[in-house]
Length: 224
Ligand code: NI
Ligand code: MN
Image: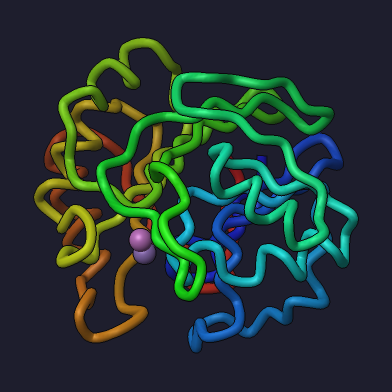
């Protein structure tokens, strides 16, 4: 599987000729060079309704005739805007042509500016091409990550490290210890000053715990 990072919490996952995007915050994300019209995906996954995650989801879904996947409340709103959707909810998994998506808890909010509260935020366990990626969404540290790690063979964990709105570095290191992924990848940092964090510090600390850490540069990619 190929993991492509567009900064903040936005990743594209590609395996077996299938490609999806998670939390497509492109416009307003000053770090990525990618253009919304260049995104070619078959599904758009959204962890929660905050603008830095919902982002350009509607436009990307329209451009690609791709469904929006997330919690019922977020997906219902998206469908009211004229795109297709596949509502799920926390704890539930669904098989799609590209792979399997299971929703996990996340401790955070899910308010969309000008619209209102759109249910609970979530994280995703995405299995494609025999690899499982855990995208934590925006969340604080929670002990059930240990359970998620015990019940899933996680190849890559995408963990927020920027603090203030989510886990900071030390909590994200503890999250990695709970999850025991083959590789831990930092996200949700340095987009704005208030979430500035050194991803190399995260890598150093996670490797002290025996877990491989990789910083994917913005618009860079790795193969897992
Ligand atoms: Ni958020
Ligand atoms: Mn966020």
